[in-house]
Structures are given as structure tokens and as C-alpha cells.
Amino acid sequence: MPMNRRDFLKLGSMSVLSLALASKLQWSGARVAKATQSLSSEQLHVLNRVTWGITRADIDRINALGIEGYVDWALDADNIPDPLVEQFVATDPLYWQPYEHIEAIARDDFGIVYTAALHHRYFCAAYSEKQLYEVMVEFWTDHFNIPIEDYLVDKIMDDREVIRRHALGKFRDLLFASAQSPAMLYYLDNAYSYKDHPNENYAREVMELHTLGVDGGYTEQDVRELARILTGWGVRDGFNNRFYFDSYNHDTEEKVFLGRAFPAGRGIEEGLEALDMLATHPSTANYVCTKLVRRFTGDVPPQTLVDSAARVWQESDGDIKRVLRHILLSPEFTAATGQKFKRPLHFQVNILRAFAPHFEIYDENWIIWNTEALGQMPWGWHPPNGYPDVTTAWISTGTLLERWNLGMGMPQAVEDWWEGGRLEMDALIPQVTTAGELVDHVARQVLGGEVTDADREMLINFVTDNVGDQPISYEQRLDRIQTLMGLVFNSPYFQWY
Image 1 (cartoon, helix red, strand yellow):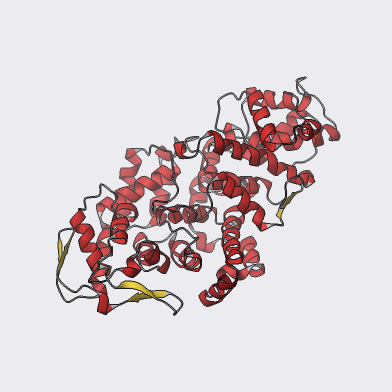
Image 2: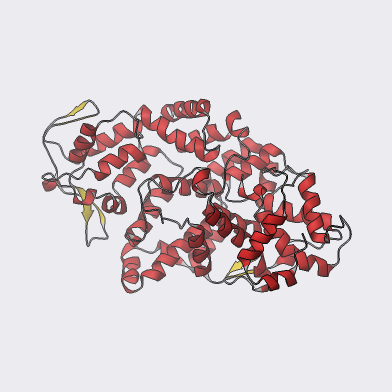
């Protein structure tokens, strides 16, 4: 199993290195890190699910507050100071500029605005203190999916005014904001839905994907009727692309939607009524709670938790915070350790958090190129159903190799082998006297916990060329620490959570 820097140089390829080491290591089969003395297994599980990656600050906070206190703290995102994000926005404010300012820049240089939007997404996920909020921003981004390429400035506004504003609020407000979002109106064609030619695209997707679910009890006639109800809901082009209700192009004839009669002669209010019906429908509670439980437990969401979360949803009028609190403090959630496979964006952001605060990104294009290779660019999914949230969608030979390359490559930023970022390894991992201490420090930094005894022994043997735990020199540490960290990134412990 020996593999040092000289071997790496001889191989000359991160892909070859990844495959060579993957074929040499035989993990024990464990995919959940063991708790350390300072962190219980239940605490470790909570941090894995409500953050994009565990940091020392997360560990200290959950120890101080306990699990219930930590969940309540994380849900109260409006009152969490976020100095790194505030500093980032102050120095790179393009994403938060007025619509007309962003649009003017995008007309001259699409790439500058596109890169700024993606960089904002990465930075907030990796470095925001409001980690559960950022997790939910990702969830709702998929739920109300809109690809950014064709709707750049409007999608930025949608992210700001719809997703981020309502990510931990009431679902009704989120749905109403999405239905009046120019990006959504353009993407699903409701901006072009007129009384003489109703467009059914948004009417169908708002029921199938945003509220009731495909088996939620609506019919094809309901799709046609909702399309008529929403005629005239469009965008006033040239006026900062704001939502506009065009009464002239609205169908004012009588309609029947989900069994309720809508009398003739009405305007925008019937669209608001129909959306309210969808927001409060029992099928919406069941459908959205199924997705939420799947996101926080596993590919097969426990039906008992789906049912109880749906009851909380209906009792609280779709209060997202209350539903999340119920899920995160449930016994079904506690039992669901190691059942989620990190999607590519999560994998990459988690590495950035494992490096924090000792990693500097000095080329924002670098992280975009890496994410593109992994297959999950932010806002890059073109169908309206959002990126898949099941393991089978993300495990294949090609995608795993790209992950291994990234996991092995990013620690090389300590010596400028990895372009676009710089890692201060000596500040990240303290000096140690033995190989075992080195393995333990890396495991705690990367995983927030520890590996099994068998896997610890395997990693120690990697460090010492199969002679077991023993004192190591500073030179030996330098020779192995980057690859050791890459091995842990590419292990089942880091891939699953």
C-alpha cells in the first residue's frame, strides 16, 4: 500500500492515483464515523444532517446547547450573526445589486454575473453560520427548480426574493412568491398564457411538483381549469421584470377547480384562491413532508414520520420551522444514521468546510469547473423536478472517479498543486508525534468523529508503510498527510452521512 509524493509525481495523474489507492484500501464497511469523547453519536448525526459539513464551532455549540437547543438555535436563522457572509457581500456585492444594475452588466458580460451568482451560492453554503437555513435553501431550490442559464438575472431575483426570503417561513408565502416570480413565469410558460390560448405547463407542474404530487387527487380537467384561472399572470417586461396581472388577457368565465366553483367575472383573486387551496390541501402536506423526510432521513422515508410531520404541517398552517423541528427531534430521524449519500455539491462544499478557516479560494472559476465535472452545478438542472435526491442517481463509475479525483486533489492545494485555492495544512492539522495521532486528528477534522479500529489501523499502516503505529518525523507527516486526508475524503465515512 505505499504511496508517497514521489509515487504521486511518477503517476502524473490524479485519476490514476485515485484508482490505485481505491484498489489498495479495503474499508471495514462502516460508513458512519464513531463519536468522539466530546460528541455523542446522536449529536454527530444531527450535525451531519443540518449542516453542509461539521466544523469545530458546530461541535462546541451543540455541546453547549444540547440537541434540542441546537435545533432551535439553527431554526432561528434570522437571529444568527453571519459575519463571513456579511463581509463577503460587502466586498463582492454584485449578487445583491438592484435588478437593473445586474441586468446592465449581464448584457455586456453574461459570465461575470453567472460566476458571481454561483460563487455566492458556494460561499454561503460553505461559510455561513446559518447552516440549516442554507440546507433548506438548497431543498427549496430543487423543489421550485428553475435553470439559471436562460433566466440569469430573473433567477438571481428568484433566489433572493422567493427561496431565500421564505426558506424557513410559511409554505403558503413561498408558493405565492414562486407563482409570481418572473423566472418561474417564464420558465414554465405562464407569462405567455392568455384567455384565448391558456398554457397548461405551470398549472400542471405547480400541482404535480410543487404542491399535491402526481397522485395528489387532481385530474386533467383540473389542469385545464387552473390554467384558465392563471391566465393573465405574467411579467411586465422593461419594468425590472416584475410580476404583472393583465386583466385584459385573463379568462373571466366560470370555472370549476378541485370541485370548487369559481364564478364568472373575477380577476387575480381567483388565482390567489386556487393557490391557497393548493397550499392547504392535505395532499400537499403529505407530498412535501415526504420530500422533507427523505432529505433528512434516507431514500425510503419512514411513513410514520411522514404522517406525523404532515399532521404538524396541517396544524401549523405549513410552518416550515415547526415541521423541521418535529422531523429533527423524532426517533425516526435519530435512527437514520448513515443512510444518505452526499450529492456532488454537498461533497465539494463539505471539503471546503473541513478546510475552514485555513483554505483560501483565490480563483472563483476553479470551484465552478470542479462542480461541473461532478455533475451538479447550482441551478443547472433543466427539467422542472430538480436534482434527484436518491442515492442511485449519483453512484456510477464516472461520477465516483470525479469525486475521488476531487477528494485526492484538493489537499494538494497546500503546495499549489491544486489551482484556484491555497491550504494552510500546518494550521489545519497540528503537529503530532505518532502516526496514530495523525490519523486521529485528520479523522476528527474531516469527519467530526473517528473511524473503526480496523480502518484506523489500515490508515496508520498507510502512513508508516505497514509497520504499525510508531513515532513519525515532520518530514514523514509532510510526505503522507495530503494523501491521508484524501483517503478519508474518499472513504465511505465521508461519502455517506
